[in-house]
Image (cartoon, rainbow, N blue to C red):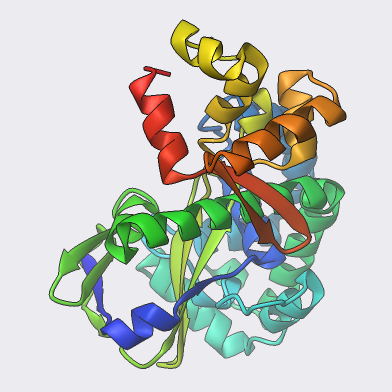
Length: 321
């Protein structure tokens, strides 16, 4: 297993970061795999996979670059610069483009775990990688970025609540398969047999993406990132869950339904869309639930999200919802 040595100060300073470039690379990975993990990903692939495959068919060098860069156990490092807080897609992809050609080829040798194919022995690999990422961004991510950003922000709020309630160990255990807190300041980041890394004193960021994938990256010994699949990607597709009779009698069926949905952070507009209730009704329910201490409001970027409090969790659990 691969693990990092993380002292308490480094963990306490760690933070969540949203990255348009990481989201774009995660979508590139999904396109490369061509198989969705859930109905939302499968629908997305039906819309975008034909255009992606046509692009690579017309550009076999870039196709070879993708296959080499997304190795079985290792991703070529120059494709995944460590996300920075507040960095735009343009700023992130510029770092991919700025990679040295000899560095890119060396990274591909590592991801391939073997010799570099003759077709990739060239100096324009960073430029080709940046152009492909730009295509994925413009065609598949940017048109939907506002919705994606809201989902990512909701995940960050949920994780922040989890830190306050259960501590960092619970959060690190739940990021993605292969991550867990081992104790004794050790954080397992994947299941691969890689040498441990001492990252105490470095900057550590946790980066959610909507596709069901993840990876780790770092810059020297100063900055480290864990990219993980966020929760709640299909929140807008939730079925209307039945409200237990006792909880409905206590709060009213509509208000109890709102409380049940807030197991994951949601905005007022999203609650309106999911419940089918009017904006005024949802607002009144939220106000009553907040006054009763059953939900709380949190700000994530430009969004205001609501989530159940510990008291709200107890009430829903006791009702069997």
